[in-house]
Image (cartoon, rainbow, N blue to C red; front, side, top):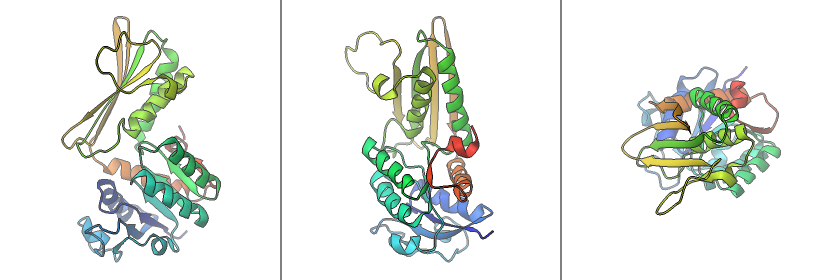
Length: 269
């Protein structure tokens, strides 16, 4: 079987750089193109040298149409508008679209799902790591097992350059907790507390967001009950774990039917 020809979006970003390295290191795939915004200072540079590797013969470009020509898959950890625009192009070409982009609105999420119904093989997750997806499964089980006398709080911390809050992973854990209790996260989440808020409302799922330094990602799901507390925690120490998950997702989706998938599908959870 021929190597999967992969396009990496956001080539100069933290995850873009990690994804370029991961593609180069993963058997069964090859870097086909590296995309970045038109005003990026890395346009025209060799993608391999950009990440400290020998030249890969792939220069960073802003021309998505050329980049997608003869490609098989796109790895996309960028921003919602760019992801939605790319999803529409990918659907027309029936490619694999692995999405680690977070902060999508309901309308943007709907547009991505529409692309999946129109020919794309979309794998989208708030977090691509095995550990976090296992954590989500445990959070769902704990929420189902524990009554509403156990308050659920999701605490997350990331580096000071992260632009969306709560993180996609935190929301993923919140959704898992809500699914465990068979409730809607949208109708039962508390994102902000300030001033005279009154007592905590039973059954709600709270979020606390911390930003600072160079933290890759830390997430804790807290179940605080009468006289006891259960904490389920994941600490990411290297962005390579997200990139490696994205590579696994791309290879997995290569022979799947068009549709919308999650990392739980990829990992068989």
